[in-house]
Length: 216
Image (cartoon, rainbow, N blue to C red; front, side, top):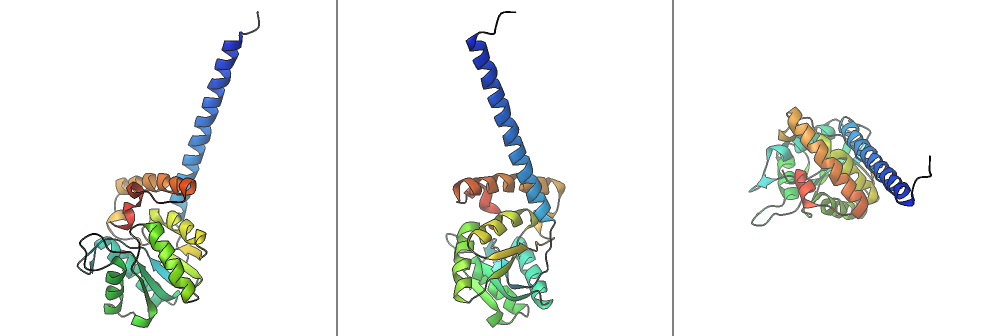
């Protein structure tokens, strides 16, 4: 048979490159989704300086169901001696009188956590902003280790951001609340967090469409 023409060889090379790129992309996305699912199942009760409650919506100082589930979980960690402090995070949405961090502090104190054991960090409208503000507050208090308390699917991205800010972090996600109820909800958040984490790895920045979990 005559040798393949140059254009035919080029076409085959391009096809192989495209297929290889698609395969790599599939492996990266699939591997990231698996890690999101895997870390969501972890519940590390190793002692830490603080539990970090990622912010969620609050209504005039009253935590939403999602935020209350996280606060209740953090309070149990404190009561069990897993952490010495609880940090509440999250800033103020337009028109709000209270920050998410402030609403969290009020709830914890009302439910028996000593006020001097609550670190309110009322800054940040997304996970990265809250984690950066938290890291500054932690350094000021010489707090170096943190157990991240959020919804299961949010755990890996939040932990990654905390580690990038110099904290030694692990996760103990809440198992209750509106974001962990149904299989459809779980699949939705795994998919969203997968692409949110990939975007963060690429850009070192949050993206609002993926970051709404911290406000819900």
